[in-house]
Image (cartoon, rainbow, N blue to C red):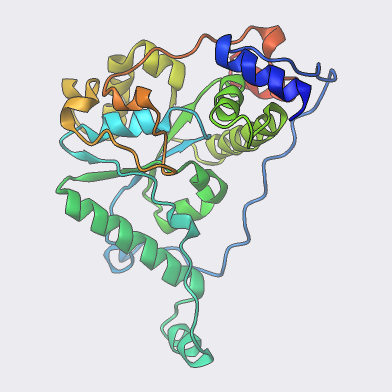
Length: 292
């Protein structure tokens, strides 16, 4: 272990600070990671939507890693009509043809591999909603942001909640969750890839609802009122004290499983970094989102 890494581990644990190389001025924001090539598919029929989709108007929380999406989904899940399960990672579920005959058979039905995957995603989400006994499903997998156009094509009536957080706070939280696996510079690169994709999604999908993690931790009731109005449900006071509704346990690897989440109440967010504490690569996005 290098001296710098040892020093940073000690500083992070005791003060929350760290030693790092000063960024070069004028570092441009890289483009968001390209989306994976999608298999061929068609969009659901506008004339007969019930033929193609069981799920109606699903909602998706579009966010970076370490942006408070687990906290938000637990509060929404405490609502009597909203079901927000742990991360489902539906866009990583794939369908393959076992033989050329099966492929030919599906083609004769007008279904390509992408269509079959969409039917699988829709059936899974609808199954989970029916099991919950609630009316609306809200999905929060951060990785969805890299396939968000395909999600929109799968459910043209989908609703999108854009959850923002200070990019420097995202990077620091991501680094501190596993300093050995994610040195600060790697955490910055990961954070930038996600926040850039979220920024692109906001531009590509107008009509969504944007909330900030910092506003949620400062005044959760006000932000939940806004979200409930967007999701066409009445606000319920029990959403803030989400622990009373149960279900605060998060499967490890499927969201934020830290003790603060399991308290069942909204905890104060970390103090925002000063401008000179923001990594140079993150500064353009911080400015674009009004954080700098």
